[in-house]
Amino acid sequence: MTPVKRVAPPAPEILLEGAPTSVSDLEERLSRPTQLVLDTLHHLPGDVVVLGAGGKMGPSLARMLRRALDQLGRRDRVIAVSRFGAAEVADQLRSAGIEVVHCDLLDRDAVRALPAAPLVIFMAGQKFGTTDAPWRTWAMNTVVPAIVGERYAAARMVAFSTGNVYPLVAAPGRGSRETDPLGPVGEYAASCVGRERVLEFAASTHGLHAAIVRLNYAHDLRYGVLTDIAQRVHAGLPVDLRMGYANAIWQGDANAQAIASLSHTSSPPFVVNVTSPETFSVRGVATYFGSVFHREVAFDGSESADALLSDAGRAAELFGPPSVPLAQLVAWVADWTLRGAPTLSRPTHFETRDGSF
Image (tube, rainbow, N blue to C red; front, side, top):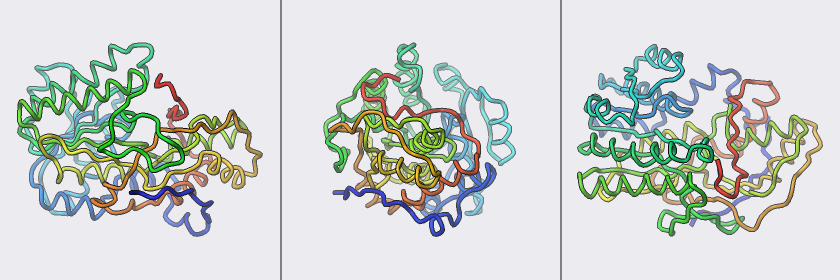
């Protein structure tokens, strides 16, 4: 069982070592291969297709793969697939030696024409906008996996899911484990259970070997739960305490553990929670940010008796501890905020308790 810890206020003079100070520093650090990634790919030859590579996490994951293969002296291709609504993302990936394929994953014929590969990482999905257009979310989160599961049935596939498939659990507490019953709250979460069930169907009918990564929550300094809290404290805005406890993991570690999950694909699919080993208190982290920013912290509401939490015990056993501990990530977010460094202005809405996104 993973112990529940409160994140102690970090000492910036110690934990700021190696902190990214610019977007270029951040991008380099996010895509830096860990030894875990190198060891995984050493034993898994072949090209890698990344489906949904144009999202928030996809570009850094694709670059991590390319850098790792280069370090290993491998000429295998990394193929990034997405609609690529932002042309600059595709250009940046090409400049990093990654092949780019424009594709609408809802187009069955287009998916059928995608390059074959023995290794696939499936990142496509939709969360925000579900309340306004639930049909689009259900299509992206259930129809696309059906198409992809059929096309890449012969591959090892790692598919991103979410901790939202679990119910709210007692907080603070150990969080939900992979063997716990699912209890999605709201249509987005229900559609994510649908994605997992469709992949199980692909495993049963097509022989797909998959690993399902239930992520909760990945953190790039430009966005994430901690950045949401830091931005509100710095602006003098109240911090919502309804979801009083949470998990967060450095995006580089989330991507590294997802890549490492290629070694654990199976039929039926293997499932692993990817998140921080610790649970942090929203009140405690906000108070810390207030001390660093010299701001008085205002709170809205009080902590509920439950929260969306995941137990990372299985991931810790398989992958070891994250390379960036949670306390260090907190310090990095504080430093990034004080620098006035860029954010993506994409709130996570982690405080949402009714599943409406």
